[in-house]
Amino acid sequence: MTNPIFGFIGCGNMGGALATAARKALPGENILLANRTPGKAAALAEKLGARAVDNAAAAKESDYLFLGVKPQMMAGMLSGIRDALAARQAPCVLVTMAAGLSMEAIRGMAGVDFPVIRVMPNTPAAIGEGMVLCCSDGATEAQLAEFTRIMAGAGQLDFIDEKLIDAGSAVAGCGPAFAAMLIEALADGGVACGLPRAKAQLYAAQMLKGTAALALQTGQHPGAMKDAVCSPGGSTIQGVRALEAAGFRGAAFEAVVAAYEKTLELGRK
Image (cartoon, rainbow, N blue to C red; front, side, top):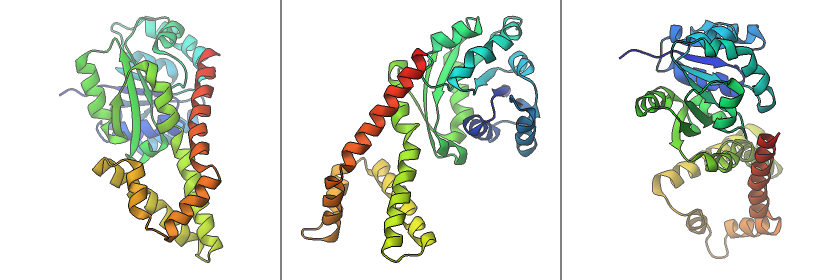
C-alpha cells in the first residue's frame, strides 16, 4: 500500500493535533507542515520527524491538504496558493476545518474544482480521544477510506451531512470547553468541602471520563444514568435539586445554541 502525502497549512492546536494523529499511520516524510510563523512548523516537524515546508510546497505535493487557518484568514491564505493548486497535474483533496465555511465556499476561494472533505475536530483529538465530524463532496470511496484509516489516530470519526456539521460542532467541537468548566466547578466545590486541589480535580475529571465511557458502552439515556445514582432522600438528589434551581440544564442547552449561532455568523462573514 502506497502511503499518501498529508500536508498541513496551519500548525495551531487543531492542525497540530491532526498532524500528530496522522503521524501514527504515516512515515514522517509523508507529512508536510507549513505555518504563517515558520518556526512553529519547524518545531512540530522536529517533534514528529516530518518536513517543514512553505504553503506553496504543501499545495503542490500533498495528496490531502489540510487548511488549518481561521475562517476569516481562509480567503487570503487560499489566494496565495491558487497558482500552485491550479498547476497540479492531478487534484488533491482539500481538507477544511474552518467553522462556518461550506465546502462550496472553500472551492470558490481556492479557484479549483477539487474534492473537499470538511472536518470539525475537537481538542481531545490531540490524545487520540477526539470526536471528528466529517462530510465530503467529490472525494471517491477509496479516498474516504484512506482518509478514515489514517485519521483514526485522532479518535472517532463520524460522517454526516454538511447541513448538520455546524450543529454537531457546537456540541462536539465546543463541548470540551463546557466540560472543562464543569470539571473546574466540581473541583472548586470539592476544595470548598476540604479536599486538596489535586485530588478534587482528579476525582472530577475521572468521574466525567468514567460517566462518558459508561454512556458510550451501555447506550443508556442520561436521565436513566442520573436516576441510578439518586437514592430516595439521599445526597445526590439534593445536589441535583441545587443544579436544577441554578438552571444547570438550561445553561448547557443555551451554550450549545449560542455556539451554533456564532458558527453560522462566521460563515456569513
